[in-house]
Amino acid sequence: MPESTAGRVREVRVTPILISDPPLLNLQGVHQPATPRTIVEIETESGAVGLGETYGDTDYLTAIRRVAPHLAGADVSRPTALRAVVDEVLGADETAYAEAGTHAAGLRGKRDLAKLKASVFAVFEVACLDAWGRILGVPVHALLGGRVRDRVDYSAYLFYKWAAHPGAGPDEWGGALDPQGVVEQARLFADRYGFGSIKLKGGVFDPDQEIAAVRALRTAFPDTPLRLDPNGAWSAETGERVARELTGVLEYLEDPAAGVGAMARIHQRTGMPLATNMCVTGFDEVPEAFSRNAVQVVLSDHHFWGGLRATLDLAALCRTYGVGVSMHSNTHLGISLAAMTHVAAAVPDLHHACDTHRPWQQEDVVTRPHAFKGGAVEVSDAPGLGIELDTDALADLHRRWSDSDVRDRDDVGAMRAVHPDWTAPRLPRW
Ligand SMILES: O=C([O-])[C@@H](O)[C@@H](O)[C@H](O)[C@@H](O)C(=O)[O-]
Ligand SMILES: [Mg+2]
Image (cartoon, rainbow, N blue to C red):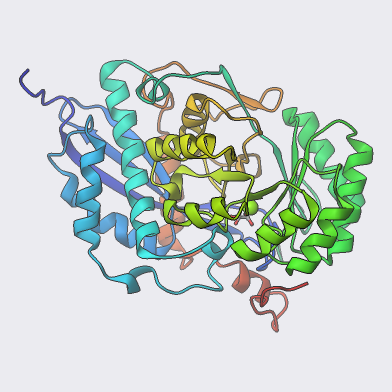
């Protein structure tokens, strides 16, 4: 069959943007008032435009910009072939992505070149599948094997938070710095979006305060699955203690301590199911973690596992080893949410509601932002990702990026602006 030119890449556009973000607290500090994202558009010879969204920090943006010109002439129906392009262009320079520690990406596990490459490939893969789906007139989930559900459940993602960024007026969510504040935030999320699962971002206060918040949630929402995620802030001993205290209260505990050894020990001694988006974040980390039974639920994330089809590979691997799978999130907009929803729709054994930060964002680059109904997003059968780019919004958010000197997410720096002595906590903090 002669190769068609319809799917041939004519142009790749890479647009950095800044999106506003509320003062959400975590182990490292607080979210900045604005955080970077990168939007990718792949336009084909037929005029179809596929969309992708990912991290906007300098190392990602630089790498994406380096690879983009090399995609001209590629075929969007053959995204796998782009892995080699990404590998070749980014080469073997480990220093491109070497520093660890205080970077906000530290909240999502290891940082190395392989993971950077997986992330760069992922944003292009999503855009290719979107474009190819538009050309064929089929949804992205059909290109992934088809949806096995009509709706994807998401969980309410609660954060301790300040009522406002320093110097700004209060936002619509108000402050949440104690159990009562957390319960009020949960009610707001449940009323507005109907979420049927609740996750609390921990690692902010002493573990006993966070246990009290979880107990308050349990009282207020007796039947709702609950999770707590301190991002590895605790020692194995503390993790064990919290796991015992919250046995029967939590659906799972997420990254209570850093490292396979501590995770394995906490699970072995308490039986608490442990989820992770820190200790297993790439295929090379799977063998040791699974063989030591360190994690019972892997939180997939197409942004760094290497795309939508890699997420299905991960799900198959988890299924083979009897490990559960769910989904991690970071601050994101509607293109990411569409991609997350399409791949989640195609994962056969998805028994936990996925994470999403989307309700915290008040802006979007899609013309019709997704609605959460009954805590779920409906799976679209429209061609591609089923979304349209709002070009005016993209231009506005890009202008904000151009006018600002914020180039990286920096929760530590944002906290230091309020508490000058603040440094990234050494782990374990408690
Ligand atoms: O948005 C945050 O502050 C989260 O802490 C995020 O950075 C984590 O990557 C993530 O949501 C998680 O589940 O650990
Ligand atoms: Mg987590």
